[in-house]
Every structure is written in C-alpha cells, then in structure tokens.
Image (tube, rainbow, N blue to C red):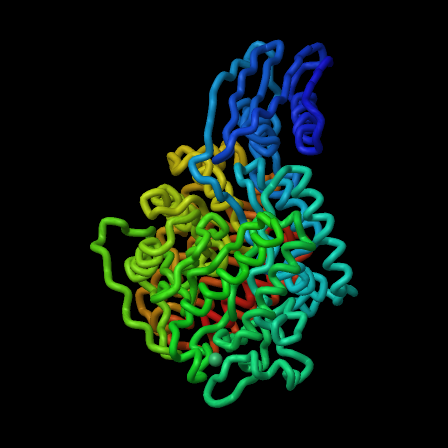
Length: 605
Ligand SMILES: [Zn+2]
C-alpha cells in the first residue's frame, strides 16, 4: 500500500496526517495508492473545511489546523467509519474500495463553541479517551474545571461509593501530571481549552479550593473581611470555601480577586477561555451595608471590568467567561461590561426541566424582582429564557449555553432516546436564542445504555441541528448490527417512560404516575436483559448490563413513588451492590460514583 499524506509543519497537521494514514491503511486494499494534501488556509470564525477526495487522493483544506483535523475525521465518517464512543475499541472501520472514494463537499460549523466540561469520577484513561473522541464527534473544546481536575480524578482513584475497590494513592501532584497529559493531547488536536470556573472565591480567602470539600482550617483572620457577611457572620459558607461568596464592595477583596485571575492568565497562556465564577451556592451573598447598595451582579460586573483592564494592560488576550447562574441570572442594574470583546456570556440554566426542549414560541416573561438571599431558581424554560433575554439586552458579545442533560437528568431516561432528542432540539434552537454554541457539563462516562446522546450532541452542534431519526439509525446500525431495530425498539419504549425530572429531584416524591411508569420500565428491562443476552459484541453486552441495572433502578423508583420509602432504599441498596460488583467491566460506560450519588442525593433513594 502506498499512502502519501503531505502537510505543512505543525503538531496538529502532523497528527491529522498520522490519523488519516492510519485509518486509510486499515480501510483500503493492500495494492491501493493514494496521495492526500492536508492544507490550512486560516480564516476567522467557526471551524470550516473542504474535502476533495477521489480514488487517487486529493485534499482536505481547513480554516485552522483543528478544522483540517475535523475535516479528516468527517471524511472518514463519510467513508463509513463510525466513532461510537470514547475509546478506540468502540470504532467501526469498514473496508473501502478506492474506486468508491468520491467526496467533494464543504462544511462550516453552525456554532463556534462546541465542547464538554468534565464532571463525575474519572480515571486518567477516561479523560484521555474522551479528548481523543471529541474531534471525531465534531467537538472543538474541553473544559477542565478548577485549576486542576483533582476532584474528579480523586473520586475515581479513591473509589468513592464503591467499598469493593481499594483506594489507590492519588494526590494533587498526580492530578497535575494527568492535567499536563490531557492538555498536551488537546494541543495536539488544536482543541480550545477552558479552565477554572469554581474556586476563585476560596482562593481569595487563602484556600486551595480544588474541591467542594470543607476547609480543614478555620478562615484566617486577615482574610475574614473579604468573606461575605451572611446572617451576621463572615466565615466559610457551611465550611466550604468553594461555596463561599465574597464581600465584593471591599476594594481589597476585589483587587485580590483581580490579581489572582490576572496572575493565572499570565502564567497559563495555553488557556483560551478562563472562567471567572463566584460561589457554587446561592442565597449567601454579602449582607453588609456597602454590598446592599448594589445588586450582586453589579459588583460582579465591576470585578470583571477590573480584571479586563488588568489583562489589557498586560497585553493578555485570554477570554474571560462570565456566568449567568443563581444570583447572577439577574442582569446588572448600573454596571456594563466595558470591553465586550474580552468577555463571553455563559448561560447556565442548571435548574431547568429536561421533560422537553426550549419553547421559543412562548411569550417573553418579565424577570422577577431580585430579593437578597431569598431567591428561588427558575425551573420552567420560559423563566430561564427571561433571564437570558434580559442579559442579552445589556451585553452584545459572544455567548454560549452551559447545559446539563448528561449531568443528572440522564439517569432518569433508561432509553437515552428522549434525552438525546431534547438536546438535539435544544441545539437546533441556539441561534434563535442568540447563543453561539454549547458546552455540556457532564459525566464523561454517560454511556449506559450507549453514547448516543453525546454522538448526537457533537453532530447537531456542527450541523446546527440534525435529522434526529437518521442519526439514531446511523448509530444503532453501527453499534448493534443487524438486530439494531430490536435494541432501538426497547430503548425507544424505555424513553417513553422517562423520569428525568423525577430522578433529578423535581416534583413530589409520592407520585402514582411515576410509579406506574417505573413499573412498566421494570418489566421492559427484564425482557431486554434476556433478549440482549442472545447477542454478542460490546454494545449488546453493555445493553445487557444496562437492563440489569435498569430493573433495579426502576424497582427502587417505583417503590419511592408509591411512598414505600424503606423498601425503596433497600431496592437502591440492591442496585448499588450490583453496580459496585460489576464496575470493573463496565467502567468506561457508567459512572457508578455519580449514578449512586444522584439517585441518593437528588432522587431521595
Ligand atoms: Zn459586603
């Protein structure tokens, strides 16, 4: 075989060439000869590429080195490759005859921001496999939360929620080593790096703030004036630095915050998008007389402007991402962001329902009045959109949504068809919502029963929506083979019985309709388990495990919704035993730590 790939120098183009050569070598017959040029013609804006391939070769031209790599993977997909899940073991690479290679098309990504944010419990391999998968699925960004992703790695290596697995030694230095490897793999692929978000407020108060844990030390006296005054005291909020707000009218607190962010941007030039968020709790903003004179968002915007001025003075072009979340959903009253190009608006409707997609036809609502430390989070989609619209009236810059379909709600959809459809419809509506992309805050192992939702997410973000049913068929054919309709039949029926909001803790726990649905899901999972056992292959094997887990979860949900709490908890214990005992073989598919955490802490099992 004679495959020649030429390209200009550069790490990402060299990687793209290696990838194209390696896949074609597995697809083409031994006597094939092909010559392909990979070219980058830089162009601002969304990722774009042109593919021109014939039986003897041709070219793939991208608007950036990353876009050229995306073009390589897209061309491979057009030739029949299917990248079904993180991990190269889950790829379908078909043979192809050279004479069948006739591709000539151009594509521009519909949205600029297309990324995933790390959550859950993750091994080093989980993170690296996910980064490898991102561009294959059409994504261009990854978000490592905090200054290092220690907390997510620590949960895995300590095997939280699984007493069967012995904790492995893992410390902050190990997390930094994994982070360095992850960032190197991102650079290799030209992916955009998002970082931090949580932890700044704790750092201002003198803490490492790399987790949501309580501080082992009391608040230092010299930092006490910087902490928010809540119910008459300035201290860590419920002991947790990451959840503690600041006294942002205090010029020293604000300056310390701005210096920390500026120092970080200077010493981490590889960070493209630096997230500057406040506490990860609400109704705990400062009640001192000076802070009371301003809306919390006005003090936040003043801080952001201070940060922007410092970055500009140092010639740093790091983008600062600010967050519409909790108190900050209320737009500023007096302050405005002085340099809109510096900032990116991130809309985070964490309390939204996942029963349905955004309804843009509903009339615009008014934002409710802000009452200090007495807010309730908006649950309805119209209420959430009202806040976004009000912010868009005062901020004209770049923006994206930070959404959570694969964060908690997905455990309530045992079929994954429903949650995949909702996120597909949401993504199709982003332009109309005035948003230029989507970052999914999620477990990286959101793969039980399969990775369809993430697959649809990547494709819909690139294409600006998608023919959902066609994508589902494409995925199922590749994952389940000739009996794909059988798998789809079961999973579609399970999705008709979805309890996403119930599992997410929304609504009364005693709920006869939910109990009925869970009972039906229980019987359906029983039949699925025996039918899946008749098939082979990794996706059928994962489906069989999923059906066993699904029966146990559905049983627990049925009992809880019937008000039989202690029996429900016993059923949850049975599910936990099963998931813990089988975790080794299902590790890449299901985040056992998170599934148990959500069903206990949010569902109430
Ligand atoms: Zn204050």
